[in-house]
Image 1 (cartoon, rainbow, N blue to C red):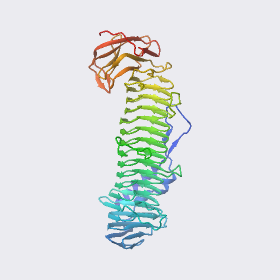
Image 2: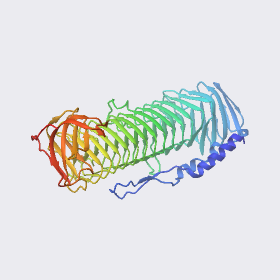
Image 3: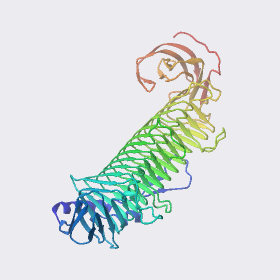
Image 4: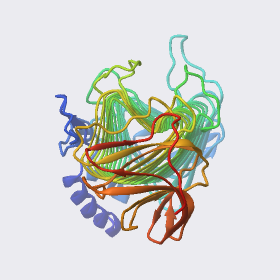
Length: 586
């Protein structure tokens, strides 16, 4: 065994003793406490335990069988493989070092041996006009090695010839009916003109490598699971980019990405897992369905990140430009950290159950609704949302004004919402315990800055909401333990008009500049104390530092006093719909 392989074995042995494929565990008992129940767990499943071992990537060079591809013929030096014209058939487990070019041929793996078939792609270029260039019919498992500084190519034709009309496989340029792994520092480029680029009907593990795929249909598909340990992967696909779609076993049909640089341009979903999508880290540049400015049909799913059950993201850098939802799950979404730049033709983040954001920087620059789901928990992070409809919408989808039990909870973070409709919207309750929340709400009725069918309890945080002159404009509930004020102005104010509250000593309480015409302001802060009086001003200037409409520090001057008020209860209302109000110079 070479020293290189011995060192690699020691490193991989340590890695595989502590790393395994994980599935998500979810406590199905409903918990509306705001604590997240959805976590990755350190339970090794049978999947990767049977599929991958450290020794898969270790071999003795003396055991290699050498195969040379010579255009339309093949030279086999060793045992375990036979050549028939431009078709190579591997019938025994072992390590095969393959080099050269096939202008119209294929490599078939068909063995009943219970040990590994290892294919070393050592500068190969294989084209097959009527079938898969690589077709793994039967094997215990196959490992493809991409040696450092090698460039390897696979190309298929636009139609395949099958032995009978009932056959429809192989259906990918690199096709496998067995567990398949890819490893190495070299490159693999696939031009898939028939359907998929890489497809495994069992599990697929990409341990490393530089992989580039242009596919008519799906780019990379592991039916039972797709695990990416690391790698530099680029996919352009007419269908889905990454896909795992075993719908017969709840322990399968998942995608796990540990790290890597991932670039996907997909006509369908960029990444789709039938069950869970787990991302530990990575850099992702994703475009689906032509991007957020493209029309997408409701019959075609064109989402960025999609899972039928759960999505958990621990960390990473994500740029997502999607025609459909950018991040979508059929059950739960947990975002623990990371950087997200999102432009969506539909929702930025959508779940059919619970979305929990524990940290991260999320910038949704375009969306129909920013974050939508029955239960939304924001615990920390920097979140900026631009939405043509609701910026945040806690809803079970029933419609109407009845309380449907949905919950929007904000426990912390720095949140800036710009909405065409409601900024904070819940068909159930809203609870705010902390954080800084700035809402640039709608200027036209009947939409409002905050809309809640149940109660809105504020017990902490800093909240300022601009909105329209609508009877539906709501203040926090009287059961709140932190004081708030709802101010209805006598006339509309333009977006270049400051809104200011100060105490009787002239100390700044809030100076805010909405990004749109506004008629009303909702404000809540720990600085509003019961028994104290405050003055409201509009217009003027501030020397403070402006960020997202909020001025910090500096001096306010030159405004016109609109009204004064004294906090006598948890909610104070100043002004009435279309009412006049006192004025005066400052």
